Image 1 (cartoon, protein in one colour):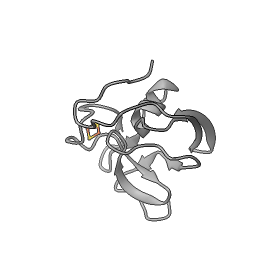
Image 2 (cartoon, protein in one colour):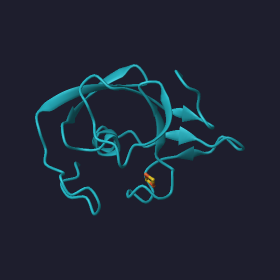
Image 3 (tube, protein in one colour):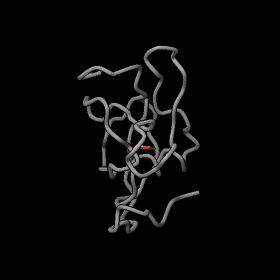
Image 4 (tube, protein in one colour):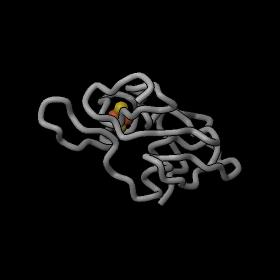
Length: 103
Ligand code: FES
């Protein structure tokens, strides 16, 4: 299942197919969709683990408010993937706790 409308991102048109890397695995995505949408379409549900209890988190609000979807993107931690559009060749990692730069 893919997302075709977003309540906040107005320009949400599906573009050409691109490839992104998630924890070392390559998946298909489309220009114009968010990272979270691409991961959901590939049945990836865990985006990060909490610092204190190591509890899994994934998409919750989908509008950039809750921070449950934060991941490390191209070495930068704490990226809200529900508000960040994919770019060809992005390297995305499941985030552990607060994440690490370069991690
Ligand atoms: S799912 Fe809540 S900020 Fe992304």
